[in-house]
Amino acid sequence: MYITRVSRSPLSKQTAVQLTKAVTSFSQTCANINNSHLAGLQSARHFSSTPRASLRDYFPEPEQDTKIFKTEAAWPHPPYEAEALRKNIYFAHRQPKDFSDRVALFMVRLLRWGTDLATGYKHDVSSPKKAADTNAVSETKPYAMSERKWLIRMVFLESVAGVPGMVAGMLRHLHSLRRMKRDNGWIETLLEEAYNERMHLLTFLKMAEPGWFMRFMILGAQGVFFNGMFLSYLISPRTCHRFVGYLEEEAVLTYTLAIQDIEEGKLPKWSDPKFTVPDLAVNYWKMPEGSRTMRDLLLYIRADEAKHREVNHTLGNLKQKEDPNPFVSSYKDSQIPHPGKGIEHIKPTGWERDEVI
Image 1: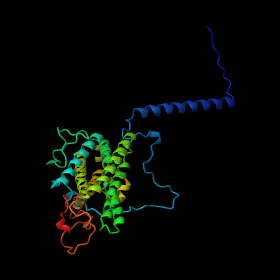
Image 2 (image 1 turned 90 degrees about the vertical axis):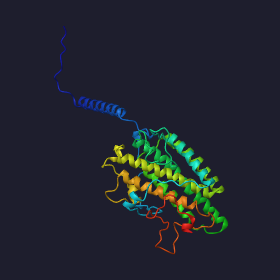
Image 3 (image 1 turned 135 degrees about the vertical axis):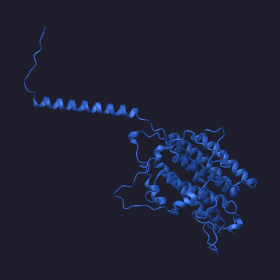
Image 4 (image 1 turned 180 degrees about the horizontal axis):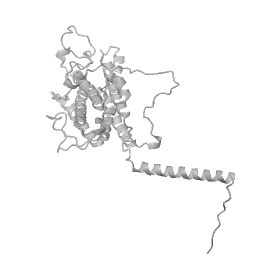
């Protein structure tokens, strides 16, 4: 039997330093392994393909050493009263009256089918209710819609919804230049609509960053939709405005169902009182203190979509080359309700021509 003798002499200074470095390196290696293991146990970010290590704010704040403090919105948002948001905004459908209207409604239904397929929007009824159906709100029941699924749908919708206003405004601008005549106020309203839809998109992108597959779908949808709207507006501007009016009906329906989900407690993350909307939304809609929940945000966005619904249904009722834009016009009798930028006298199915011209 052998007995090993252990030396009791003190370690040299050089040996002690080497042992300290070895222990420190071993501790750091163990910590990295543990962190990697814990990260693997967490749920994956399905909405984004960006690795967690390189994830940044999608729209980072400006550097502190810049001279610009804040950039205001090009088109300030008109103020909305809280009571008007709840009482004046609701789902409504305009019945088609001629062949042009029926073509526009058919194209919206086709687009709705493709959007449902692309965003995975399902219902627990045999046939999903659409804007043209009766009782579309009460009879449509979203199936297993989570916060993530709603965001995917909203990002996809808003990335496409900003196209028609820009296309129509651009074509009317070029038409005005060619004819060397005024456009009677249509261009500003159409461009403001496109700007407003883009602000919706930027707000949702503050909450989640889309992955590469979602970006690819948006790229394809935008390319097809832009060129389709471009050619269609050259052929029949009236049909295009009716199309957008029906499209906004679908948007109002979508946000109404999302608000109902929040109110019924089906979306716990958005129902959490600690959840706050992005500062971008607070500044743009001038949301008051105490009314900055996700439900409040969707109420504002739904009101915007309802306004676009009213504007485009109204423009679809007018003579495209002659009539002025009733939403920026001054009226002789100010006591009678008339179109405007607010939602005080909003008409869900639009104003008829004999009411405003």
